Length: 336
Image (tube, helix red, strand yellow):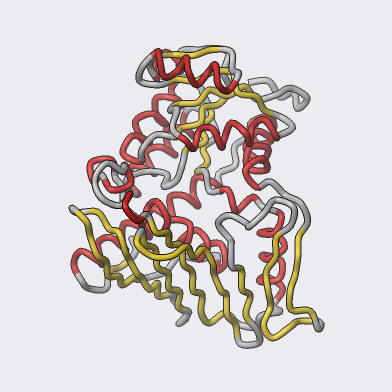
């Protein structure tokens, strides 16, 4: 891998799913990347995506794309059950990996993925876009400054109403693909809680409703060493909610669209009661998806590895595992 920071990272995409088109836009908007190749399970699908999105090469198998020596990085937009297999294969081909969330089907797989990437000297990152938004850095500065006082509680939610899409056919509801609301939606909430508290919970307790063995409505509480509490809920049958609140002894910080800001021109959050007589805080234009690509590419071009990204994803998967176990057993579970 060259350390020439002036060149672009050359991407190959595994999967022609809808999310791949969104990530392609992010790459196009970034300053240091370009999409070169696409792979699908069939030559026809890959060729159609290639023609629609204007990339150079199309492959009818995922293995064929990994053999392409003209690629630096791979975006994996496949179902969670396939993340470990193809991340490890990509790493063994010397390709850096941006993998959709959740990083894997479970924490054990996440650790295997991270180890494979570390062993082969390639970067691994999960595709949690909101953590790269400039607003996220501003909120973190306030949280870390002590302006909220001592932390006591965090609450988060990410829900959507799939309506008639909820029954059969939606891959989110396929147990064999590691589907479910926790990995699809709750993963964002868990990442937010770990981001705000900078520590792992000791125990969790959770409850859920299921559809054919897949969680579709789940609530959980995370218990921390010093008495701090965090709770979140995620669901496929509830109106859209994508917010969190971090509450301390002096004030609380509220963000009502943390997963995806309402628009790219500006974003906002609130402090209650106001700090320095200012309640609403705004951040200017930012395309978080493009920043995610740029941050990933910067790490690759630096010639080093950012170990924080895979570890943050592993930690989130450990909490996910404990939450699912707690909901299944209907009892409090330790986070291992």
